[in-house]
Length: 147
Image (cartoon, rainbow, N blue to C red; front, side):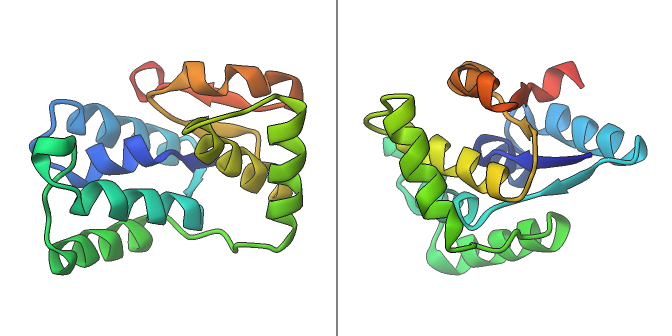
């Protein structure tokens, strides 16, 4: 099975000082050991860069673009990048209308659209509640602590 890795998991994976870093590393190891693949979408990379370069005082990592680039290269090397297919937009558009999505949750919906277009059902995320609404679409959110 292929899992999409949510940005909140990627950020904790990249930040070795974060208290959840070991939880993420253990989940990634266990999933791979059990034959699962872990991938990311371009949307994850955009979100990762946003948080990585945002000041720490504003809930970011406070990294320079050079350091963010280094970390993003690491993430891209470990987690293969899905293509950003043109059909993702139309799927995203269908989902935001069907589920009345608004505000910042539109970003998670774009991840779900990428999953649907790439025929993926599972996402590794600390925000499982944000994806519950998509269970009727076959989306299963898995918390790294529960792997």
